[in-house]
Every structure is written in structure tokens, then in C-alpha cells.
Amino acid sequence: MKIPVQQNILNLTPYTPGKPISEVQRELNLEEVTKLASNENPCGPSPKAIQAIHKALSEIHRYPDGSGFYLKNSLGKKLAIAQDQIILGNGTNEILEIAVRTFLSPGEETISGQPAFIIYQLLTQSANGINIPIPLQEHTHNLSAMAEAITSKTKIIFIANPNNPTGTMIKQGEMMEFLQKVPSNILVVMDEAYYEYAIDEQYPDVLSFIKNNPSKPILLLRTFSKAYGLAGLRIGYGLGSPDLISLMNRVRQPFNVNSLALAAAQAALEDAGHLEKSRKLNQSGYQFLCQEFKRMKLFYVPSCTNFILVDVGQKAKEFNEKLLRLGIVVRPMGGYGLTTYVRITIGLEEENKKLVQAINTAIKQ
Image 1: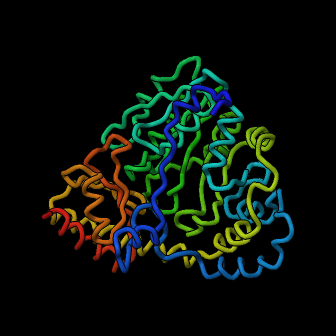
Image 2: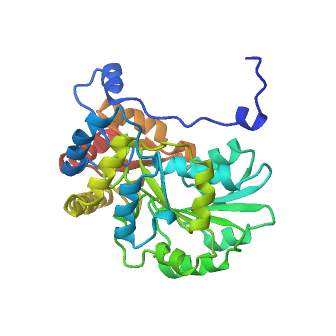
């Protein structure tokens, strides 16, 4: 192609999505495939969300509410925060992109954990910025090292808590100390995509910190893709000071969240019973899988999420191929530098049992 392209774009390694389940079935001639690769809620969405989608279908010839008024109103009441402190996005990925486009200039730096959500690095590079990866310590963000990495060029710090792909979390005291330490000219993006699964009493209350420290630029991200089971609709939200959100809204595209997503998210938010059911299923599945991994003598990282990072003791890519032929889809972590690890989503009881059976078979092959 003769169109000139910036070198930082040419150097990007595109995110590689998994194949559709139907294609895996066709290629490998499998009658059934169990997908445990993308950290989706195996319970599916709330029935109330499904009803809300059906009701909203008759209005899809209209543009969506560009302000997300009703969903913001529900979020505001639930979280005791003003609507002008909320931004909605086409998944939290879009909000991450908006933050980078708003606050990062070419040549400036971002800091993130390594390994952590790979999108932080991709977005930084696409904006012609420089990402500084800080190795995890015992599979958890090393906040001391991240603080030491701050320079005059640092503009954004990304922290996933709980972290993906390790499933670990930073505790309250350590997080609050770090947030107080970060200079007020640096944006801290707290990515809490797995917040609803983190039931540890020491999980940090970053939202209260935002409310009590309005001068600190902190963007707190949460999503409806995981525990709420709306991954296919792509909707997430960000929380911050009114000034921070106002700047990001200058960059946000009109009508960035579709009508069905807005309706479903509002209904899902109000279905506490479905959320609790999802949490309980996840906890029982986690306990079962941990017992089985111990029995098989496989090292795993204790998780606060709906997935577990497991060392299978051989090349993850080859092990993943074995599982695929057995009808199980997991996520090999070689791209994160974890060459013998796979990330496994906690599924339904019968899915978890199929997984264990397949792992037992694959280990012996």
C-alpha cells in the first residue's frame, strides 16, 4: 500500500481474537465445544436484561440516548455519585482509548504491569507514546516499582485490579498509599473489570478515594461484560471527577453506546439476584477447580476473579491444541511471556468437569 503510515502503527502487533466456536467445531469435526477462554459469565445475562432488550427492539430505528441519561441515573443512585462523574463506553476498551486520546501526547509515557491487560500497551503505542512495563511481583502489581518508574514524561498509570491474566489483587492499604503518592499531574486508570467477583474484605475502595480526593485525577473503570453477562453488547463505564469526565466527553463520539446495550445494562444493574447467583456459581467452581489442580499437582495462581492462571508444565500453545481436539477452548498465555501457562475461565459445573477430564487426558498425551 502506498499510503504513508506512521511507524508506531506499523510496529503494532494486532490483538488476536479467538476463532468462533462454530469454526472450531467445523475444523476439528467436533460435535460440542466448551469455551472457557474469554472470562465470560457462564450463567448468561439476567432474564430482566433479555426482557429489556426485547422491549427496546421496536425503537432501534431511533438513535440511542447519547447522554445515557437513565443508565447514568441508575448508576448514580447505586454508587452515590453524580451523573457528571460518569462516562459510558462501548466496553471499557473504548473508555481506555478515550483516556489515551485525551491525555497522552506523542513521546509521553504510560506505566503498566507486566503481564497485564495487553490493550494498555497497544493503545499507548498507537498514540505514539512509550509504555513502561513493570514486572509483577508474585503475580501481583509491584506498586513500589511503578512509583519509582515515574518520570517527568509519565502521563498515565494503568492498574488492573484484579489483574488480567493473573487474577490477583492489590489490597486496600497498599493501594491507598500508592494513590496518595502519585503526583496530581498524572492520571491513574484503575481498571476494575472483575470488581464484582472480588469478594475479599481487603479489596480497595477506590470510589471513596475519588469522592474524598477530587483533585486527584483517577479514572475508575467497570464493565457489564463480565459478571453481568453482557459481553456481546459491549458496554462499560468510567467514574472520575467532573473535570476529568468533561474533558473525556470532548473526545467521546456521539451515540457511542447502542440502545440495546443501554436498556440491558440498566435492567442488569437492578437484578441483584442474578448477580449473586453468578458470584456463588463462580465461587463453587473456583473451589472445585483448585482442588482438582492440586490433585493433578498443577501450579495455579490464587484468583479473585472468574478465571484461573494455571501452569500446565509444557508449552501452552501445544497444550492448548490438545485441549482443542478434546473440545475445550482455553487461552494460552505465551503472548504474555507465560510460555507454560493457560488462563481458564470458570464455567458451569458440567463444563468444569469436562475441563478436568480433558486436562487429565492432555497431560498423558
